[in-house]
Image (cartoon, rainbow, N blue to C red):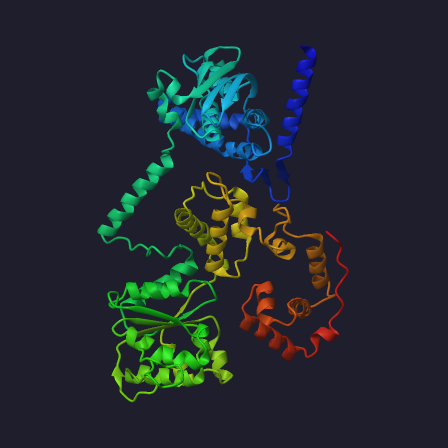
Length: 582
């Protein structure tokens, strides 16, 4: 028997050691991580004082319910780690992750008395001994010996953990409790329906949380304010509350009811078409057609026929007469995206349409009147194109009647979380999957990443996470950023295994020191980066721009500026300092 106890103790130590390896303390960031969940190390007495204040404020019954639910959610979180471990070990060993974590977290020492479970059949019976319960001891300290069990947070944890692990409601009862004067605590757990008084405890495992009730009440308040005219909410497709986004949306709101031509400016993926559709839907033409066309996606020799229409036989291949986009949008709104890529010949005809309000199809002399509100968008500087002779100045001044600058996602960090949540809900519905959200580390990665592709990239990344994350879990870092190479991972602040690095590596610090000590100038650093990106992409400027997180025109401008400021800069630049290997 003694030998058996030694073996069991060794196995327990090994299991605890494995769990301890999942705990990471980061002194530089001041964070503690358990797997991908951020943890806190707090004083037991402070927690006990907060618990006492809750009881004094809410009363014993309401405080019990709140603390039980808090423990329940904590148990559900820890069960995620146990389910991951169950893929590489037996169910019994994986289940003991929870009791071991309860011990490791300093809540209570847990000893297994009896444990029987079959996840496939849904059978469960568990009996455990609790020693040194912080909750029982502190409750007794403040309130004296109680007539009923008082380890509410701990019992909630056990219920939440086991229910999540088993995939069905499991209820524990505390049959002995230190808060009642017993030497230790003892709990028994089994499926909810196997308890005679199950209905009295249904609230303990009911997944309808206080948060969901608050969200429901909040929805009612918003609807009430809307009906009273006190609050104008955002359209369903627009999410954001950052100052930069709100400023752009306010410009949109003021222009929506007019017929003025609007020029939407912003990087690729910021949501220019969403803004254009919202302008249409909130305007007086909302019941008419909204027609969109991407000028960059149409071959130059077909742009005019797409915009203005074509008559049969106008050119080889024109087998039937066809109305153009202006005619199709008559009475409604026409949105021309990437207007900077419109050929000069088409620009001249577009200007005439805007001035005269009429179009002529290719190969036809019939004039057709059109009444269209025009919205245009671009991710390039039209003024620069005008100077270069690539865009007509008269057309530019005609289109630039009302500008709306849509900020990039990196300038509206506050909106990343609500956008991620909206996309998560959308793609869970599309792919028929239920997920609990994002891990703490995944949330941090979403906020850390620069998002060169803006909202479109965020949307695609969340969809990838929804597809790769197992049902019933949370999206982890590697589910979204699994396709990143080592360079991209370092830019994000991740290593190849998905761990968060310190803000600056040794190489980064050495480069900073080289600039600050006068060994290199900022122009030389920029030139070195640009040259390396162009070389790595074998001269493909679009690919190099993606590496640097800028647009192709922005990269071309930087290259031209550096060449004008310091011709042959890369030839005369000081050699790169020797950077230590991280």
